[in-house]
Image (cartoon, rainbow, N blue to C red; front, side):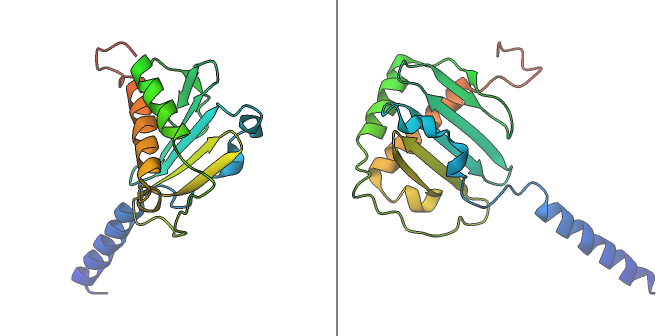
Length: 164
């Protein structure tokens, strides 16, 4: 085989491998992974964020007694995280404002490198792609508020010199 052709084929294989590496799961979050115990307590909030180019797998659970726990990687156990009272109030208010009974979420698979979300509030549950869920203003506010809480509790990267 011609040496130039061999190099070209090797570069194409390498480019294909690079493009597919790091792309997270594109399916919607698995609602069955959220404990059914949330349906017994109407004020428990369970929120997941998945997908994206880095393959994000994050979960946030707010208990009725305002204990906030999160995990930032697939399979990582939930750990209590710090939060500001104002953030918690904003998140609870945003989730409580969602009218789950009349909510209409377009059924569409997530786009390339798009996040998927799921939200459980008592017996009410919704899941879908970022573009589908954020079409509803109340869901967009709730996703924003819950995402802010996730980011605020994220441990500092190792070696950053910040307490985690």
